[in-house]
Image 1 (cartoon, rainbow, N blue to C red):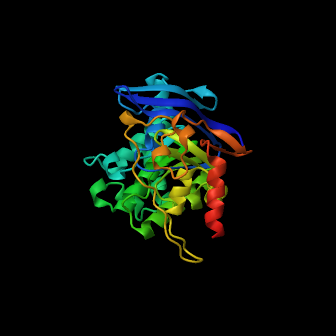
Image 2: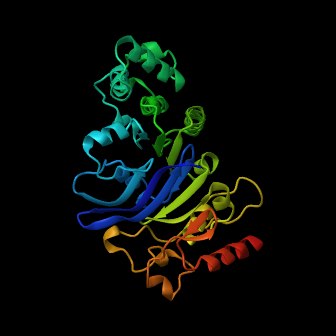
Image 3: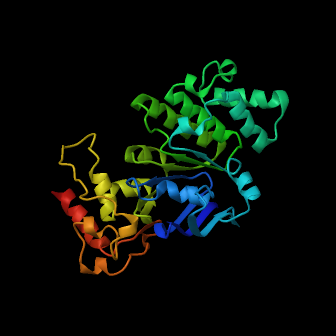
Length: 327
């Protein structure tokens, strides 16, 4: 699979406090990558930093390459072409991403004019086509409506249409089903999946919902306290998680079939970035932590040809999981 986005050593600090601590991620053309972890793990910040969308006081370092071209710290004019053109992002709160005093037509046509250089009747026709594509009924008339005249699920569909306006190579969906009921969630996810297949786009799905990630992603990266702690093909990660944190996330999911079991909970909370523990950030919450875990930060190491984990107790963690499964 050809490499499309390559992130290496991406670090972010706010007012001298590190919140991302050396993130390495790669995304292939047409691939769907899931990014999971608790709130505060750094999932959204990773991509906001990669696209130059963080506030000026953020100190960002590392490397972000798009098709081999470095875009981290690129001039504003170049980033304007990348954002929306090559890489589109659906933000976590779609309602706040739309201007409440402008019609949907004006906002959608602005994106089409900027990224596709369309004018006149052609830009309006394309705007209508995009609304039809994402399932907005009576698209021609509703182009003249304002954001408050749409339901939450329809607003999310409009945001997907705006993301598609530039024919992007990568679509970053940040919690695309937040605040939507289960039926609408399923519709939005099916829409994203069908659009990805139709346009051969790569997709990054940032989510707390592991079930959503399992069904829609080829590969999953687990984040904790500003680092990637495990990365593996989706089917392998959910069948055989290795890092204790990944085990905890999956262990907290109720099984839909088979015998009932007690759910496991991860004690404690994600550490404050300004008071990060020595060594492994997860050690204070880890039932398998040993004295060496507090000495140094574990680095991502391969445990198979297509998966990596950052845990010096990885083997013990795997044996413990197998022991639990055997019981």
